[in-house]
Length: 224
Image (cartoon, rainbow, N blue to C red):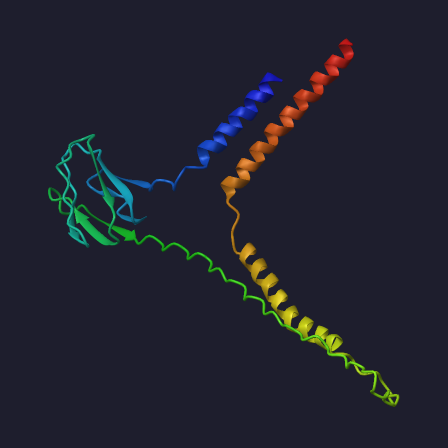
C-alpha cells in the first residue's frame, strides 16, 4: 500500500513540475575540424541554435566567415579545444580556416516559424424583444343592441394567437445562431496536454486512495 501511495505522490509532483515548464531549449550542433576539413561541410540549423567547433588535428584551426549577415571570427583552436556560437540571425554563412584556406564550409540558418494566430471569438447577437399589444374586446353597454354575427368558414385567429408564431419565428434563428456560435467557440479551443496529464495523475491518486480504503475496511471486518 505504501508503495502505491508513494507512486501516486511521485506522479502528482511530476505533473506539478511539468505545468509551469516553458518551451524546450534551442538545439545544439557540432562541427569537427579533422583531417584538415570541416565535418559536416554543409549544415542547416534553425535560428537560435548553437554550433560548436572542435579541433581534432595537431595543427591549429580557426573559424572566420567569408559571407553572411554577420561577421564571425573565432580564436585559434589547438588540438582538443572547442568554440561555440549561437546563430540568432537567419541567412547563409560561408566560413574558412585562415590558417588553411582550403578548409571551407557553410551554414544555413532558417528563420523561426511565426506563431499561429489565436482563434477569434465571436459574440452572439442580442435577442430582440417584441412586445405584443393586448387585444381589445368591445365593451357592451346597457343600451347597445346585440350585433348579428354571420358564421365564417374558418375562425379568424385572435391578436394574441397571431403574435405567438411571429415571435417564435423571430427568436428561433437568433437562438440557433447563438448555439452555433457557442459551439464554434468551444470547439476552437485546443485541449492542453498538460491539463490532461494532470487529470490522469489525479485520477490515479484517487484510485489508489479508494483501494487503500477498501482494503482497510476489509481488514477491520475480518478482525471483528
